[in-house]
Image (tube, rainbow, N blue to C red; front, side, top):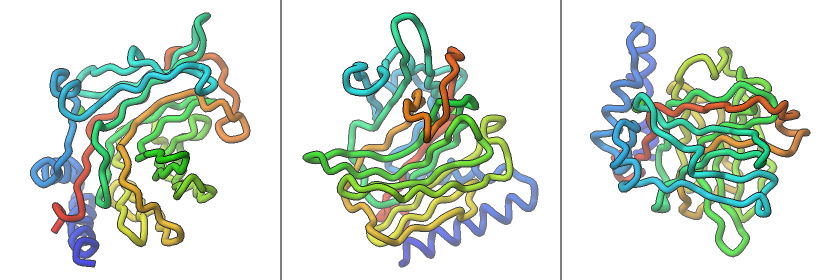
Length: 246
Ligand SMILES: [Ca+2]
């Protein structure tokens, strides 16, 4: 558990900086940029397009809505994903890494959409022969004072956990993370451990994703009221493999 100890030491530094009133995740991001094999602060359109990211396009036939590359843009050094409603239908936006990534620390500084019926998310996902793997950080727009953690292993989920943030995530950027190893997933909010899972942990390498979309399942996300457009913001994201954390 050398990697875990290294992480916890880093988190201790982060927490002490928080107490001092500094902005720890600026320095943490710099650390990730230095150490990580993947870091995007979304200030470079050409880099965004060419280095890591692809924009997902789907049809309404695949889902109850469409994911459109046009709903993905860079603005003010942020990635913006938009949910739109028009006479052409309901659409969202999604980007994902071109490469699959393995065990390690995944972090996003983001600001989700506050609106019933809409989901803003940071997650990994890969589907192999119908057996999907996924680790989720999802904001259900009807109550952005909470965040939902979940994961799927071989297509089996049912691990939803709703965490009370103690703040409204839609108002400011905060850092949301998951640290994934072969035997556990630990989720963090601003560097503080929020939840840990140890059962049926996914083992399949997956692509890092971000999306904003109309959820469809009203039991889960509430009823979408047609408000449009709605934007979710991502200031930066990073991935650091376990090997690079040592
Ligand atoms: Ca940025």
